[in-house]
Length: 318
Image 1 (tube, helix red, strand yellow):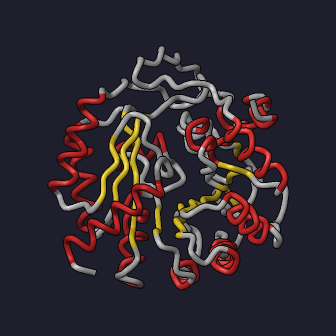
Image 2: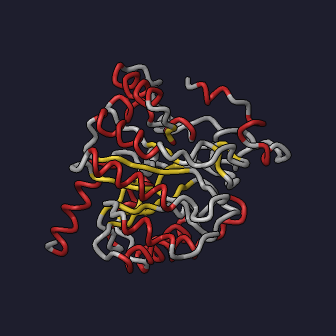
């Protein structure tokens, strides 16, 4: 267990303390995973600690941390470990970030990528609404630092929505040339007021569409959780909206409730339903779809990126 896991809920989520408790249902067999104990896991953990890096794997309590870290695949979370948003599904600590951006962080991320020997890396961040450009330049610096140290590593970024920034900040990130630009819609639009109150569905959708306008060759990716209270029709509509925005890659995973103060699990979606969503999404034209109970944005990201490139080549010849 990470020392970060020992923070009491009041410290991590002060805005949730007046929310009524929601019972946390027992997970079905298809959700349960083994505790992380492998040597590979420990080596990855030690590299993260050595370089003073935060990972979304730990901060968000990802169920796949044991499997991914055993292979040296850690998703690094830049710009601190305190988010300025208060999404009701998320376990990342919320509040006013205690520090300015660390100018040395991009270099440390690049050092860790090189030391891990990653062929593909995913870089994400907290929301930093306290910064004028939302951290766009920090993302760009991180991408450039990785390119310098590990030029053959492909880079996937999972960004905030930059909703409070000048729209031009998106160009800063796109011009740094990540291989995949990911921004998660997270849920269906009808659940935004409860699940993602600081965000706007159509703003996030437009963000991804704008990436394609700025660089039509860049892969775009987005994901949603199910089990929050949505229905099949609303999920299908999200797929339609994403394809209208020319999004290439869709991920769908089961929502897991971090604490009783978080949004409740409405139900556990069966593996058969996930398979059905995958089939529907491919039929709608996505180049790549990952739809399983344990799917997360960065889960098997390297393998999926290879499939994504192959799919584009087969469809467009480029």
